[in-house]
Length: 407
Image (cartoon, rainbow, N blue to C red):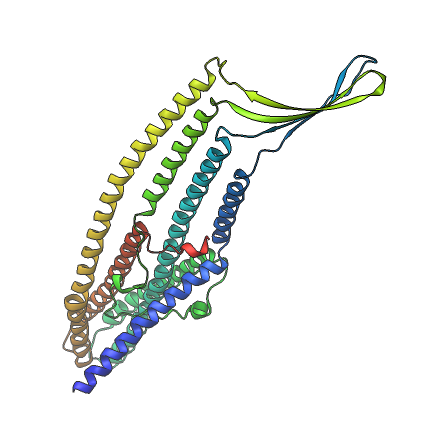
């Protein structure tokens, strides 16, 4: 007896591990094939190049002014190179770094959301298949019931109206089976689109393997860990740092700067004379445009601080609500597993015995079968809802993020 329990535990553990590995395979497949993942990678690469470019010197200004009159003195070439000793290059690099961090945070948020959509589509696909399988099983049972009632009617045990009632119910069950099959095909196409137009080998030909077991939503992808803070807050903090850097960069424009200048002059008699000089920019004569930009940026900075505060409150509330929904959904799943499903199956078995013995009315038999079909579908829907709620919670926590993909 003890050995039998060990075998059952090992089978359940293998089901859990296989379901986990299949979901992880789907997520890996999305990371490798999805065009949206490649798009995010290119956007991060673009921000990286802008960050590198901002760390370099500004290109020199080259002014060529050929003479259009004869005689006199005219400038031929003037080259000016700002030295940016006022910290402009350093501030520009800081701003580019903040822009890169914002692009990386936004890409991480979108990648997390994409993988959450993939996980949701995967569960919807698997459970649509399970619903289609249940509908096929119900159709087989309805056909068996029709055959038994037909034999009983021919032998005079039951009236002919019972056969008519069973045939009506059979057509209804067949219609539901066709609908469930169409729904499974729709969810397959949805998942396939998210995965780049193709399904992993384990999911092709409708061979998803997730089954009803003791697997609860928080056991799936147990290896994934949540980031230090929710990704929505990471994005808003990165946007706040960017606004701060932009304000500092605007202020730098009012600081004097030095530069070097090389010039070539054409003198009388076709003679030329090179010259070098030091330039000093004195941005003191200002009509108010720079001051207006500073005030505008200060207002943007204050608005971003308020947005960050609002996001903190909204994220905290969303996390609490998502955790509550997960707990409620898990309690609902346990209620179906421990109470409703066993009773519905016992009712259907008793009705089947009454049908074969002829001691139970056909309406009672059909009602017991309908109750079983309804409870089984509701149990699957409850499990799907629990898993989708868990996916939503993991998405808010950032558990789907694979940062190494964006580096």
